[in-house]
Length: 271
Ligand SMILES: NC(=O)c1ccc[n+]([C@@H]2O[C@H](COP(=O)([O-])OP(=O)(O)OC[C@H]3O[C@@H](n4cnc5c(N)ncnc54)[C@H](OP(=O)(O)O)[C@@H]3O)[C@@H](O)[C@H]2O)c1
Image (cartoon, rainbow, N blue to C red; front, top):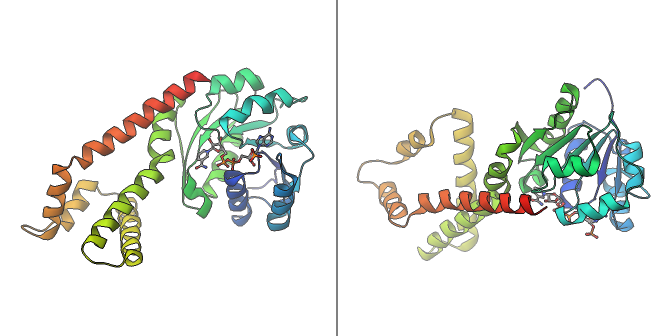
């Protein structure tokens, strides 16, 4: 990027610190370009010490001084944030909401007809392996879209989607880490049942999950083709796969995503 921007965060919690950390690590920003507000002055001081960010006196200072304002409070805290604001973001600024389930309609009703992004990251962003879905509002510019992509590419990968798909993104990559941990734990349990020490089982299961996902991403092969490559006739893998089919694992996963999708829609409608 040829220009330096000043970024602001409202809320300095787990996601805000992960994103700011990624931005600094990737050279998108240096700490002094980032201003943050939070209820806890101690939290801000700690991030000042570790990342070099500027603590703000309140949310109004972030809105007044940041070009890109990342709203990183819990969804249920958003109303209080808006009520307490005495300044409103302007047209030359952009607001980026990472709040799960808060729709573009709600955001623009509260913030006005300004450039707004609705973004759904996931927890692996904390280690630079996140997956983020981004919806760009109608007033956003190409330059702003690029900056927002840069922000979230600094903590993983990004995809732009129409807002209609945001509930599906939430159900897949937003909730997905929990599904993966559940499957990973169950696979390790199986190996423990077969006598493998617990820690070794987690190590094997986790690296297998990560390696398999990487292989799909790098080869671009259909998952069924990669599955067939592991599955020799009358071998061990086909026995394992048959057990998975007997217990409806595939169907359970489809339904897990669908149930999360339905819940995400419900939560969005309530706000
Ligand atoms: N964690 C995830 O995996 C994930 C994934 C995708 C999206 N998100 C979204 O990311 C957002 C942040 O999640 P998080 O896990 O980072 O939450 P978090 O750790 O609780 O961070 C939110 C921070 O905002 C502060 N805050 C509360 N009210 C405030 C106010 N009025 N003004 C300024 N700061 C205020 C909180 O302080 P207190 O602790 O004192 O309340 C807290 O430090 C959520 O909306 C969530 O939906 C999270």
